Amino acid sequence: MMTDMLGSIVLITGAGSGIGREIAKKFVDAGSKTIIIGRRSDQLEGTKQICDPKKKNNVFIKQCDITKEEDLDDLVTFIKNEFGKVDVLVNNAGASSAVRTISHVTEEMWDNVFDLNIKAVYQISQKLIPLMLENKSGTIITISSMAALNPGLLGGAPYGAAKAGVTNLMGHINSELNSQGIRATAIMPAEVDTPILKNRAIPPNQDARNTMMKPEDLADTVFLCASLPQRTVIEQIVMSPINKRDVAKDLEAAKNRTK
Image (cartoon, rainbow, N blue to C red; front, side, top):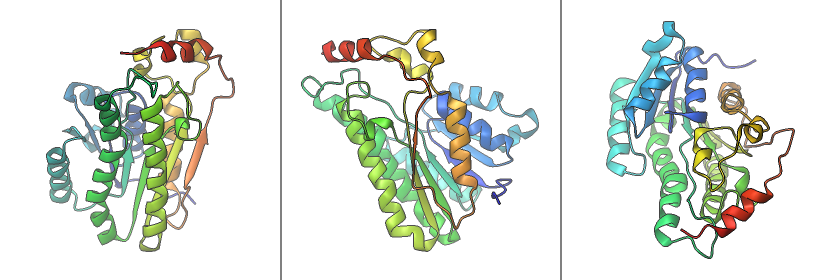
């Protein structure tokens, strides 16, 4: 039997667009009290507007840069004061670098990717785990990437390395904290049709996007992992579209991009 998510406290990072937006909608519409965070309050407001009008009071917008520890501390204080607990943390925020080859990626690019994709996940998880331990229950779900399993230029060197690291981090949380009621999941999707793809060297056209998974596919998967009975954990999920597209031109463009 699935757990009723009505009234649960859910925090979603990178909730202003794409996958994060659909995850937020899924939980809000299920009756969860959903804290959505991101750098741009206007985008977060857009997420709130697509939710069930009758349940918008369950949406709590917090502008937050998760790469800044002071922002995270303010967020945790808000959660403690407003709710006293958090049931589900969804680490969705992430991004790759413009340059993806190990030969040309700069140290600054590398650090930016790692700060967002793994350091921020470690910090926000570490800061919220004590609240979960007090409740003897908690779920941490991180959107990793197929790049963690299949290194290559589509994701890029820093992104793939960071996603491999964060996948391992979720495994460590399970190893250390399952016995205390905390569970963690790493979801590793292939390409998902999101706005961020427009930043690629060759932005995919509509035909290419039609072959990809959609943000709502990820939202359904996250919700499944969160709503399973607390005795059960899905440690890892690998997701791919049925129809694989030819990415040869994308790989060549990434190979040739040096700045």
